[in-house]
Image 1 (cartoon, protein in one colour):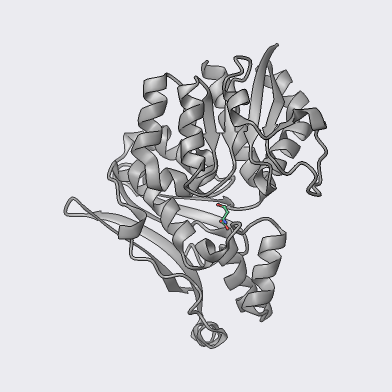
Image 2 (cartoon, helix red, strand yellow):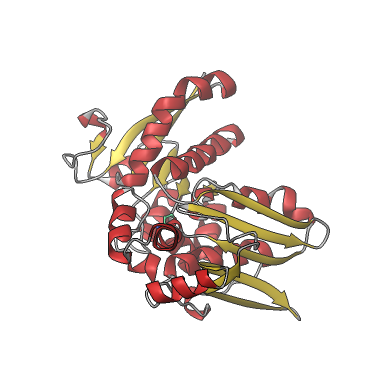
Length: 321
Ligand code: HSE
């Protein structure tokens, strides 16, 4: 049995979801892969915050450098969120020879080349499946089996919070503020939900998808972005009366060699494949030149679905090293 010592950096909702997922499936993963996935350290200052799991207190440390310098640690899972200091901490971990897994779309969208380049230089693996679409294996799909294609279009609902809000406003007539509060309580929303509701979280994810699908870099600030704060109950009612549904949609295509992209609310026909994607579910539609069309669907936010993708990345790293 090979032990994989994991350090979780940042023990909020997603850190807890990852820990829970490892607790639930530790035995099954060990039986199937021969890997003993062990949370050896939790880099976190706030030990006493109420959480649904209770790791031994001895696992907690506020000192990331102590962990990065510890030769027994194999993988650092960055779950602090935000561009900085998370990017700096990931680069430090890589330079200390640690493989890095993250769910941090803001940091990847802002510093894609630097993170990929530093991992390469340091001879470590960098994985970020959980950064787009939560538990949906879209990054794996694009970077493995779909490599046979020239991707022509990627369109998706890639934010659980806004999709949950719009769904509940549409189907249950609930107020924006009430549903946002529930999205926060259920661990869908960002620490500062402005990034969700203003469309920035979706733009971060679209920037990552563009890099992977088209090999082009489009910075988040260059993606025309409109969130859902301007969508009123009247807009929703009017769309409904016309047999349409309002969804926040990210879209990128390549036209004449140039990437055309946006994040914006869209009025979709009820028959549109994305119209039935509700609540915290996400979906990513891809069109490839030999594949044709495909759509990936699943829970795009929440501690356990996101934890599932993170654990998958850890297993992938452990089986390659
Ligand atoms: N706040 C994000 C969302 C979390 O609602 O989709 C998952 O990236």
